[in-house]
Image 1 (tube, rainbow, N blue to C red):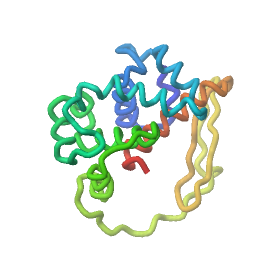
Image 2: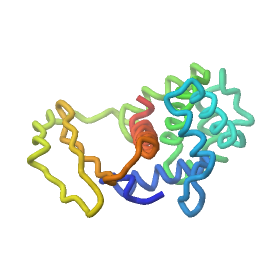
Image 3: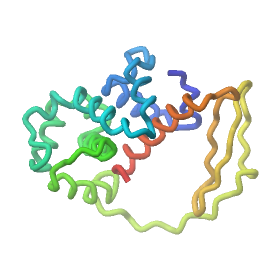
Length: 199
């Protein structure tokens, strides 16, 4: 996996996504995409996607959830298992690892305990579980043309304007294919869910 696929994403974000993908068996220790990842990406946007993703989750999280009743257990039991067994937890923390799993389970159309759902609103209140501090309204974002990025050879910076937020620039290879973009799209979705509690 070439670092260029992450564009301007922070080093922390890159590390977390790589850790998650390695935990799920989608890349190896050398950050090379596995055949399973290619097979999973091939189902993205198709009816087969939920089952394919569910199979990946079953294999990765099986050892963690073997003593958890996923459809009716408590949040404290879930946290306890993630904390004691989950290797992913060591990199991103219990709450973030659980949010990532819950978001993935939602995408896989898997049923989870209603007691877990209460965690998402509690956890996403802020990064550390405390109430969010009041902040000033965000400044009006500059137009994309006002914050140009210097393109490296063989790449192109594509700007996107999001109402009420700063402009987003995605740096991509000039010859990127639709299949490769689908893979990038899956990275970005995973990163956003990891940091926004699956919303």
